[in-house]
Image (cartoon, rainbow over all chains, first blue to last red; front, top):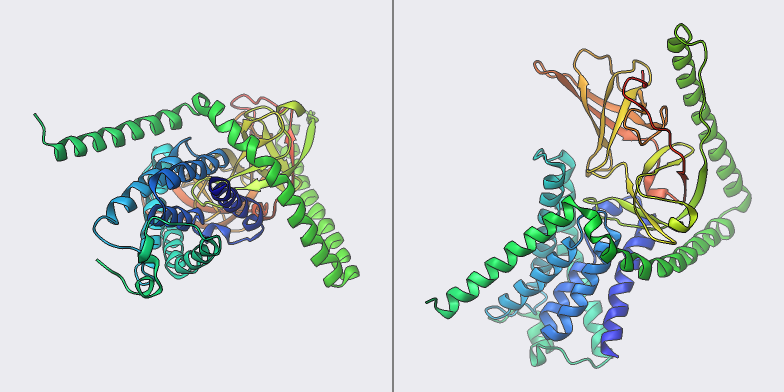
Length: 179
Length: 278
């Protein structure tokens, strides 16, 4: 049942990005909204829960994208692995660190996608709009990342879902970082 | 032989390398993985169709009931009329230009009639890196890979993947899209390539060619994909470097690709041979 709920979330995010957001003319300046979800799952759920959902989200994104198959799956997979590894040293469960975690994840995805596009084109001329897009994605992710996190936290708490982080999700620790 | 730590690092490096190799193969030979990609679109497209219907309905309700119905309808009608008039005008300029050039040689211009199929856009990737849309018609309707997609105001893109009931279109604004094009006024030729901001770079236009801001760029028909004379965009900027063979030309699309709702797929595109375009 929990897996179904997660799958519903991932399909919902893909649909939001491909059917609702498409009506907005400046949608290209909005970052990949699956990223906060991937980061959230990576940080707060065990790998056996997060990994299949993250890969499924990547699979749907790859299906819709015109890029090489497996690109989004790989990005989400390595992102999950990286965040799991980082949490061994640093507790990224505080609202003061989350914006940067989401921002860095979005930045990393953009750089990988940009490199993939350049490799496909066989040209390493970077267009002037690239910088603007990456900057807007990063800033938007830093600003809205925590909001998306709070919404997810609220949803999962209402469902009484057990996360991997246990007591670290207590209010006090949510607002202050712990190492 | 190795410590545990070294073995872990080595295996991670190997997995990353394998991952890069697989993605490179997928990039160079997309057809290898089309079977894997198909189920994703097959699973997601019915939901997209429903969501698209719901958002379309809500949009319609908003436009027709909450705003002034008559004003909205009139505005819509006038916009359509203007679009048609503009397209007719562009087509006439193109025909006139073609006539002048070809009259002396042929005295006859054969116009090919295209077999079109209309499809609804049900999904669109919003990523600026890979620009594509999904339509609700697929191989069951006769659509196949490589077919050109247009709307009355110009070129939309090319079919890159088909499923029985849905297809994926690579938009002309995608960075991997390239169209052989000419400036309508002067016939200066080059290649139109998408750029991440949503515009185009008009590449390989000779420095000596006369290109000015505001010029209309149309397809040359020489790439063997898009029929000749279809509108692509208008020149928004020209930079002529002091040295070099080519000039830098920026083009903006005339088609509002962000607001695509319905598109037409040309089922019998003409096959041009080099030299036919001018």
